[in-house]
Every structure is written in structure tokens, then in C-alpha cells.
Image (tube, rainbow over all chains, first blue to last red; front, side, top):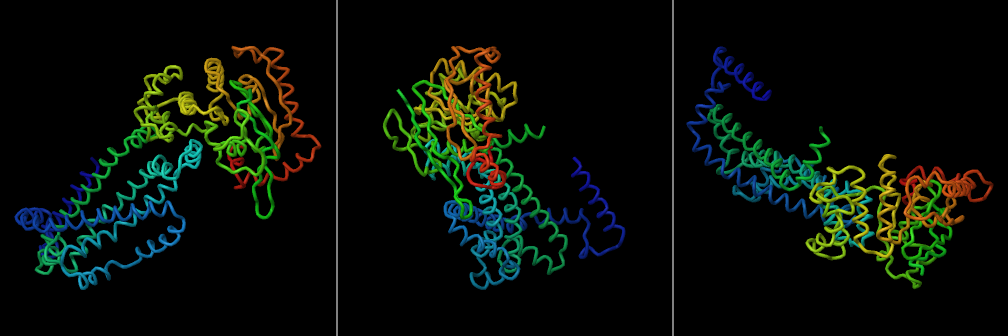
Length: 249
Length: 281
């Protein structure tokens, strides 16, 4: 476990520095303090984690549906693709940091604007994953199906969709990491509950230790979500894993 | 009785403003249960011919007749086996084999039932639930052939089916296909670059000219079946091989007009020119 070794070393250095240098815990709390205080406030952090998870989950689901529909429509119509793709790229140039506060002004402090921000930051990698995946379909496979008398819909279901799945999962993995970060960001600029606003409030009262504790929780959630995509991928496209294992050898 | 008859097939592509003729009136025919090969120089337009026959490309002129009548939907005529096996990695072997039947609207269960009894003949018994990547090259090609024949179209269209295999496997597959054909007597049209493969498997061999392709000559192969590999060393076989090669060479160095044109077109076929010739040729 080289990761664990590395993490332990880093924590040990941090701990030693925080204890010996006389630095104020408001500036840099020792990891042991972050852990202790985080545990003491676990219920409060848990309460704030729920809306964050909700926003992440809803936003991500929304983005997956929208991205999939867009990608399929673009795959069927070159004209739609020509019209939409540049707009999709342009949507990614919007600075979220400027947009998120506006969302609060427009839609208030509720869940809606958070979901929208999460969807906005996650749908692009998913769409690109699909579109590139569809493009990777082997031309010969399409010809073969056509020679069998297949129409466009059959070609889509039997070749293009399965061909696109590995690439879709790559996009999904990138997107899911953004989901929680997006939710926290949206909360940071205005919310009643949520890890984002929790961090904001704790920072304002100089509880750096609790900010770091909430960050640790956030990171853990993201990592778990990231790893879970591998699990889902393995269930949905087992053939891809099996083939890759063989060629890796 | 001629199952399939192709008359005066013409096809050209447009390269910039210039029309590039690829098929210049191809005539050929195959009787019921006849194994017929097409052989021609690289890039002569064989794959375009197949694509036209299968209905992937519209033809400019000519006709395809089935059992003496003008064929309506061309796709109903041919079961196509491409050079690459194109087994889908996400489908198990048996589900790859049933693909054509599913496209025709048969339920997966019924299609599996139809295919299952044929698995031992094709050496795939016990592998039906494997994924394609778990199979050897020869097995993949056998699965691809089975996928082709279960469609029960009047004619099999085999596009260099063993072209991607190593030479030992290819020899094995050629002998296997000959034996299998003896048993099932499909009407088959084979495209190949391999002169010996063409003669070994066929009742008749058509020799195509360089592009634009037309049939330069055809030869009967009166070698009795079943044929063993040793037949390739017998005088009748060698004589046919000599004749076929002579016909092909005539195209390579001869003073005919076609040949000059073929040379001029070389850059087109090497670049991203029209059709499939660049890839297969």
C-alpha cells in the first residue's frame, strides 16, 4: 500500500510541525486535532452532509439523463450535432464562480440552484464520453449489420450503443468527481445547510480544524463515488474488463 | 439452374470532378451449390463489388438475378462474411452467431435453439458462452462463418475470410471449409487474393482485370472432391494455377489501356479515396 505509507508520512510531518512550531491552531491545526474535533462535531457535519449528497445525487442524475439524451440525438442527426456541440463547449466556458452567486439571486437558497450547478459541471464529460464512444464504433461492424438488413435503430442498439459504453464510463468517472465539488461550491456562496456553507461558517469563526474535517469528509465521499463507478462498470460491461485483463497480461 | 446471376454491373465513384470507374461491367454467375471464386489484383474493386451486391452501395447499371428473376431487395440475397471476423466483444460467442437472426426479428431464445445443433460441426461446442477474445483466430473465423450461414440466404458472400489469419491456420481453415462445403453445398462466392485458396475451394474461378474491374476470364476446376491438401501438388491443379497466374500477370505488365489507368489511380487507392478498396486492397 504505497498510498497509505505516503499519507501516513505526510500526516506525521504535519503533526510534528503543528506541535513543535508553536503555530496557532486557528492557522494550522494538527491532524490529531482535526480528527478529534471532527469526531466531536460528527452529528453536525452529518446533518450538513445530507443536503450536499442530495444536491450531488440529483444534479448528477439530471446531468446523466440530459447528457445521454443530447448525445443520442446528436448521434442520429449531424445537423443537431453541428448546432449543439459548439453550444455545449461554450457552456463549459461559463465561470461557475460568477454564475453560482447569480443562481442564488435567481432561484434562492434552496436545493434547485445547487442541483443546477452540479448538472452544469458534470454533464459535459458525460456527453463527450458518449459522443466519442459512438464515434469509436467500427465502420465494418455497421456495414455487417446493414448487410444483414438492419435499420438505423438496430444499428444503434446493437453496435453503436455497446461500442460507446467504455468511453461513457470514462466520462462518468471524470464527472462524478466534479459532482460533490460542484455541490459544495454552490453551497459556499449561499445555502442554509450543506457542507459548503458549513465550511464557510466555520472558517468565519476561525475553526480551521472543522473546515479541514469537513474537507476530509468531502474527499472521502468523492473517492467512494469514484471507486463505485468501477464497480458499476464491471457489472454493466463485464466483457470490457475481461478483455482488458487479458490484454494487460 | 443459376441461383445467382450478375450482369453488366457498373459502378463509379466521384473523385473531385472526375468519375472514377471501379466496376466496368462485371458478369458472373453461380449455380445451385456451386462454389465460385473471384480473384483479381489488389485494389481492382472486389470489395466494391461485394458492397454493391450486398446493397451497401447503389449500383450505376446492371442487374442481379436470383433464380432467373430480377432480384428485388438485394440484401435478402447474400449473407456476407467480412475479412475481419467482427465478432462483437460484448456478445458471447453464441449471441454473435445469432446476430443476423435477431436482426431478422427472431427472438434470442429461438435463435439460440436454431444455432445450437450446428456448434459441434463448427468446432465451437463448449465455447458458446465464451467471449470472442477468449477464442483463437481460427475459432473466431469459424464463428463468423457460422454467423453467416445461419442467416439462410441463397448465397454466401465470403470476402477474403482467411486473409487475416497466419498461414498455418489459414491452410487448416481452407481444408475445413472444403469439407464443410462438401456437406452443406452452399452456393458461395469467395473473394480472395490467394490463387491456391481460390482453386482449392472452387468449382469455378473468375479472374478480374485491374480497375476498372471486369471479368477477364473464368476457369472450371474439374478436380474431383473431396479434395485433400495434397491435390495442390498434382499436375491438373498446377496447370490451373499457372493459367490463373498468367491471366493475372497479363494485367500487371500488359500493354492494355486498363493497366495504364490502374497505375494512374494508385495514389487514389493509397489515400482516402472512394470506397473500400483502399482498405482491402
